[in-house]
Length: 330
Image (cartoon, rainbow, N blue to C red):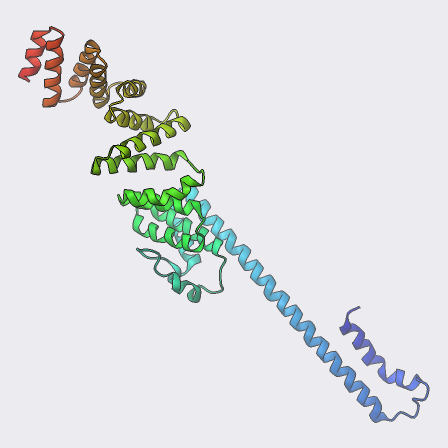
């Protein structure tokens, strides 16, 4: 029995009890009224305490319900994105964030306004997850600068959010800011998450930096990255061709020849691959095989001046003067 019910019963029984108590027959009506008043005050105090407790529990329950609902909506936004509905996921994320909390292009501007404009204080992990979903949706919609801002703000709320950091690198890569992309991926790789998707982009970024700066260590880093990718995805033709290219440009001709030969099983008439196979064969001392590859490459495209000169030279060295003259004339 609660205090409230007990006091209520006492209040009802008070007048009767007064008459039964020994020596109380002479108690005046005023005394009875005073006791009743005290009991009523106590009852009112207990009633207020009980109402306050119930109200607090109600508020807590509503907040818990609202949080569960919000978490469900965050999950549904991520689910829409994984099902290919980037536009729908972005709409969901923007609605949950509110206008003032949405980051703009830059390094997360708008984060200071978020607390005052988006209602009750939100869990940093939830905000990070929501912003990461928003950024990924923007990436899918080819809006990398806005995606970058979303990922940076997500990392402000949760610096250890590796998915946001991985995708920040993707957003920077899409803007051709390859050095910044590599910097963003460092913590992801250091955490042991050497995912083939990230390593594939690392390889491309390193290769682009090599082309821009001609630093051999970038080319070697690219080659190693594609090597790791191929170990995880042995049937990935793009990774195989990238590995062949980086091996070729590293002058690892035996490796390049092996990779280009493997790629030929998928694309037997790729003129560029055939031309490079010819160069590899020539570098490895197989002039006859080189001539076969180079002639086949020339037959599949309008041969460049360099290819014609190379064919003329190889034909001459193999004692085919007519062929050598024909390629030289072209």
